[in-house]
Image 1 (cartoon, rainbow, N blue to C red):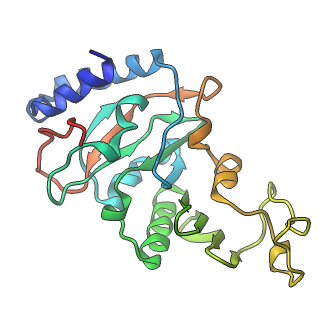
Image 2: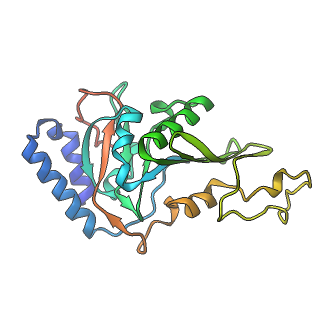
Image 3: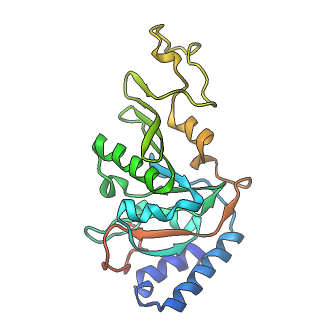
Length: 239
């Protein structure tokens, strides 16, 4: 049985719900040791994730309304989207520290919502609580591509595209003018900056697809539920 399988077995039996405070500290220590020994690998946030500074991640629990957290490694939490859940209590994964950032993903459509105001309001509140927050969204089927940088409760830079791209805020230092791109139509808008969440995430914080041997991983991650007092039994079972 792999380490991730053993972890899911603890969830499946409801063991997590019966731990004492001392046992929870031991579990955190286990996650730290296990994480230090694992090889970091790419994760798939299913096209939607947030990034916050690693030392300010506690604000994520408050803003997203997450409860009953328990420690886990990167590998153990990476499959959050495939974990069974209880009605009204969706699991969300906050990664270990990755090059100074923590990524947040898993069932965000249920936890945050799917309306534009939900998206923008959440990244603003995260930045207000954490100092800075980034949002990335990619939907290849629907043609949506969004990335947002917010600081201290205000959106500083945003790129959003379905058919026509739209920029908000001044270009950031890493962006390159898009005047040479095949989609440049000469109206000035396409010259504002480069596009794409897939590119922006690596320049701004962490590219989930590029996590690997050179990624500095510290501490452990957390799995948490979007409602309190539901319990973790059967959460580890893959759907």
